[in-house]
Length: 312
Image (cartoon, rainbow, N blue to C red; front, side):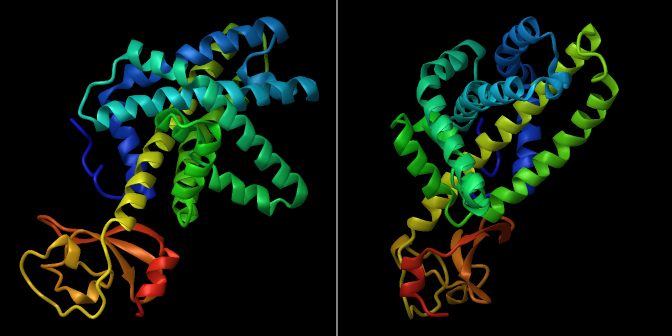
């Protein structure tokens, strides 16, 4: 059964709540998807360098940089591809299965890795040049791996698609990443202090591996939900046509007669969808209808074509 609220945009806090909800439904699946990537990878790193996850920062700069690059272009993209396919299955009302989901993730790994490499290099170049361009590109390509995994258009269209979906939603993405970081960083840091003193200790390695599995899986799942949330936002904004100077009516309102201006409706008659905020025309808010109508916490930037058509 698809998750509650998947047909409407959700706030960062709601996305984090949905991440925990999915974990409660399929805990072994998501942990197995992340562990299937991280366990062999971390064992190979241990065999080659003699260090576990908590001690990799103590390696020579070149080795640490190479491991970080592999995390960026291989480990994280594959975990992202696995998780976003599992989320797609739940949204379709199906129960995700480990083997089919793993097969799908492996199939799209080359294009996901290519998109991740290009975006990572672009972000790095932007940071080196002037910092701000790199930060902008980071938000612009926040869901490039997910777009590459799901939409099957190639790495370049995935970059464009991510840019389209994230446009006007940087603040939303920022707050989600902040919440994910607040949840993931404290246990990682504290356990690293406690177990990072001995890179060859079996307990240190196992604890570090478990922490990485949990953190990578949680982050990949949260961003997978973000990707689908951005799709909902994009589709909701472009669908309803604009009608200017339409008088207020009550009862059922045809889709073709809906307005972007929330003041055209009484609260009890306002259809669900995006509306320009009269107090801040640069932003749009989402009105949820149904048994408990009201404004959700979701916002997005008002597209230029709408601002040109409506005057608040």
